[in-house]
Image 1: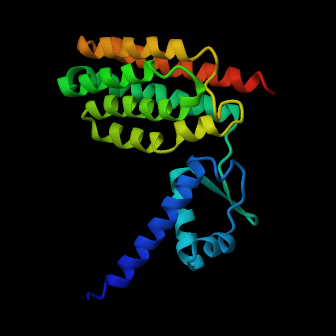
Image 2 (image 1 turned 120 degrees about the vertical axis):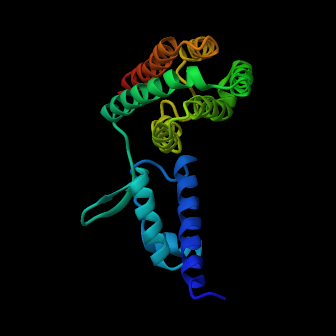
Length: 228
């Protein structure tokens, strides 16, 4: 056994705690604004407080939780302003990725986009909203990966690792259902994105995905403000 083994075991434990907490947040079992007490989590997970403390630091770096001075750590809670800012960033960065993807995407990647689009189009009600959102995540992932731009890929992978799913589940209005006027436009917008990529038209691909993301933001904000 090497001297590094205890350190490696500690890192693995911290990672397992982080994974469990991350899943609980993304699946809505830990709600926005909920306080995460180290003692309680350590007892529930059967670990000491040290890996819990380190896992919470990792999740804070990912933007899933926040440290409030003199109070502790809580799950991030988004405001309407946060929604506007996050979607504006996504629209700009994903637009760039789509422009590059139009000239580097492979036939296999285009075929996967078509398959994902067909599967999403077949999901017609809110009983399948979770499946739809996972397929949608993969749809966008294929596009930004096809850009072959490592910084864009890393940045968007970090955004998509949490925020789109967490953002919609962050609000009661959209946790279990998409806005009623969103499904059909979403399908049409995906089709336009695929067409632009297939044509190798970078400008059209960039415009299509930016319009798609901006429209999703508009619908989410309308759903939220309609319930204020």
